[in-house]
Image: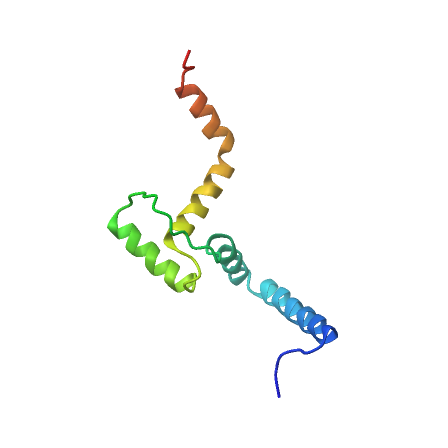
Length: 109
């Protein structure tokens, strides 16, 4: 006998129960809820295998590599993790970055 739901009704019920259970657990443990959101945001299922290079210290790479392997469950890469961190940083600081950029650049002509 299979444990998976076999009808659309059972799939809806199963989804509702698991969703409610997840919500209840999130309320009971805010730190676990925050960790889950962090994992979903920064350690998604994307892997970056491009040939672009950014240099970071060996110590930082080792730390990130261990963390991504453990927390990302091999679904993410260090490159993807760093990309998501930088993306969020740029989004949060867009106005300041633009102001600094325009202050430090001159028109070509």
